[in-house]
Length: 112
Image (tube, rainbow, N blue to C red; front, side, top):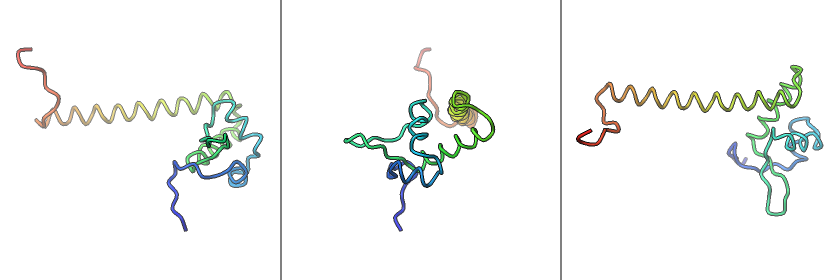
């Protein structure tokens, strides 16, 4: 068995449709609405990754919960922003902990 990284775009639209239970037309709609961004080959063929399949699963779960596609776009945007901000908070906490431990951090230039 071949081990494929989650970010590698290897699945065709028909395989992705079969894996997720979402028909190809809806996958195209998700892309048109900005919910999904599959890789495009040089010939323009869509290729989906494991991460894309996970994203499709998120979308179908939110649809089942009663959200429309515009609402789902907002939820996914906010989740991404939350993830980014948590990373920034983690970085700042590490920086603060390092400066309290006396570890070398970015120092002000001499004479300032």
